[in-house]
Amino acid sequence: MEALFIYLIKSSGLIVLFYLAYFLMLRKETFFNSNRWFLLAGLITSVLLPFVFITKIIWIEPTTTPINWSNVTMPNYTPEKTFEDYLPMLTTLTYGIGILLLLGKFAFDFYSLNAVLKGKSIQQQADFKFIDTKENVAPFSYFNTIVYNSALYTASELENILEHEKVHSEQNHTIDVLISRLFCIVFWFNPFIWLYKKAILQNLEFIADSEATKKISDKKAYQITLLKITTHENCVAITNHFYQSLIKKRIVMLNKNQSKKWNSWKYALMLPVLVAFVFLFQIKTIAQEKTNENVSKNVLDVVTTINKNFSDEELKKKAEFFKKEFNCDLVFSEIERNSSNEITGITVNYNGNLYGNGTYKQHSTNTIKDIYIKYEGGKINISDAKIDAKIKNDKRTASSDKTLSIDKEIFINGEKVSQNDMDKLDPNEIERMDVNKKNNQQEIRIVTKKFHKTITENDIYIDGEKADKNELLQLDQNTIDKMDINKKEKTIHITTKNRTYIQEKNMPVPPVPPTPPVMKFNAPVAPAFPKAPKVPKGDPVNGDKKAWKEFEKKMEDYDAKMKKLEPQMEAFDKQMAEFDKQMEPFNKEMEAFDEKMKIFDKQMEEYQSNLDKENK
Image (cartoon, rainbow, N blue to C red; front, side, top):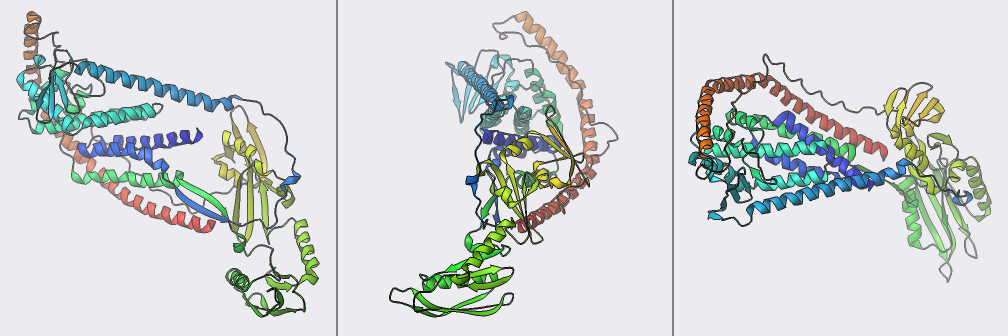
């Protein structure tokens, strides 16, 4: 379940990034169709990108002296259960209950939709299915089905409504609605997904309004129809319906000047953000141990044994190994064998710039004794069974010095220890082991499971600054002056003797985005529209005729008030044009910022490449 929660957190983070990008840069632009695909791409990217990983392999040196784990006794105890142990189960249960409740609501909405459509007379026209219902519901579309109550509207109003719903149907906006609902079910705990859904539905209305007004001659009449429909309170869920609570925003967008095409560069700003997400969270580091044939040159002694049963091919491989690893020419010659193909005589010549020159011979009436070719202290030594005891003694001396390499340090949970301490460590208690090279010095850092759990559950502060667990693991405990652990606040405060600790060096600094301009006046505000009169129940023929007559008088007054607003609407359009003009310098600064982000992206690639080279 931990992997699932990590995935949900990463996806939720991407959803937040896409929503903020839309809200801050795109929501006021008239690129409605582009915004639609941007918002959908954001959802798709949010669920797929957490599965994409860049694998980085770090090769570590093998341990030449095996660790004897049998000396360690395993303690037999049962840890007490704490609230933290039950927290994952409670979190899973809460998340599952939320999904079940929302799935139930989703199913109920489908049932309500089916109740509205069931048993109704359908008129097929071209690719559309029209249902003229007698119920007092707001007009809506569901895929290619359009539902409306013709008795509530005049002929011109009905024409405006149908043109609007046809756009929803032709462009399959129902799919966007269903996708947003499903994301709300899965990510219900993320408050931004509900804002994201609202942005999708609102943008779909902008698209339908924009396309519908292209086919309608009277744009003002269309806006009045929008206001009239606001009196309907009955809307069917999981559908595209003509009524929206944000009618004012729709009218503002209808009257707004078209955005300039070069403003579309704003979509590209998400690319460096996504690249940064991958480099920060999607790099999987895999440590692999080199094979014996790739033993590092820093190892104290590499001993290769040649015995009487070696074939010519095996001798050839040994010569290739020494040439590759130590640039030493090793030549086997004067090879003699008996009837059993066992070696009875051999001559070994070696020649290397760093290791000197030499010749070793062994010839016998019987088979040869084992030959040891040893790399030690930067020199090649060849010996036979007569000094085998000396080689074994050298190994015991190296072990007693607790040294595996020419210069190696071992740390367990940040504390410097000896080779003997590492040999006594239970392998089942190891959470992580890192091998680093610094200036010809090899460093082994081991973290136990118990210590890893402690640093994971607490916030870490080193010399007053918050640090991550990697910085704590890199800290030498010999430099620690004081450590305070607060179990209640779950914090670890560390004070070092020199008040310094290891930090990342040469990391590129990202550019600072420009500050939005201070306007000479506030953003233009659309005029306050009068409230449309409420439509009487029923229809004009069979309903309350007196109420309908009063409604017609109120609508005349309403139309007169709307006509008086036309000069204010013209003034609003001029203010919007001035507002866009003042935003032009800021838009240019954003273009320069985008170029700096491209440079920063290249610097990050070089920085990551250098890190990879250092870790090899």
